[in-house]
Length: 320
Image (cartoon, rainbow, N blue to C red; front, top):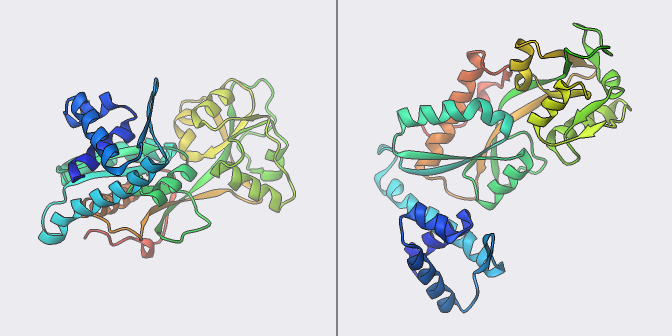
């Protein structure tokens, strides 16, 4: 078994099929199949389940996947380690970002990286914050933007900004249950027909925790995890939503939504830059992590992101 075979195996699993991996690697599909067969013969185990919808790793394949990724990462760091940080960073960086953050950060970050680090390729993986945190712990992403974690063990977490959550509703509602322009207490909001993410979603957890602290339990009229679909339902007058102000700023400006500050208590959400402290970070990962921090702060300073920046004492020193 060699590094090339490990790289091929990781690509097959990540793409979920031999054909997609072959296209990405620019290797003939029969050659990939042959390499995989030789690996299984050498190890004496089946590494992949093959089905009509693609391939999935077996239990043994999962174990190999984790070790193969670690080995390939360490091998990729050799050049950076030997040459030192004065050389330009090279490689791929996988960045896990929640959807609402990705809408604002991904494009400016990719453009900034292309200008400053043209030999680094960024791959954005979008999901809910909880999933991204799991990916980070398993080494499936190199960097992450997350909202919170109750167990920061093994992670470096830098508080970047705090954003306001607000109540919003359609301007087309015939009868408005909330006075326009006035702040709304969380207790008042709890009595409205709310459209919220489902249980175990980070935003739902934050809202429910605050509501329980004032003895105002939340009973949503509709539960759906997609922010885009929450906004569609609110626009159609099916109820009210609670989202970060930045997530609805475009619709408010266009006259589609009314929005209200929430009080008693006010609702805010913190955004963190996170990475593992249990694995060495290649220069490319450290460079993109530092650049993400700078780009995020610039978005807030330029008014593109309605949020309050955290103190500079939280600033990472990844790549200077």
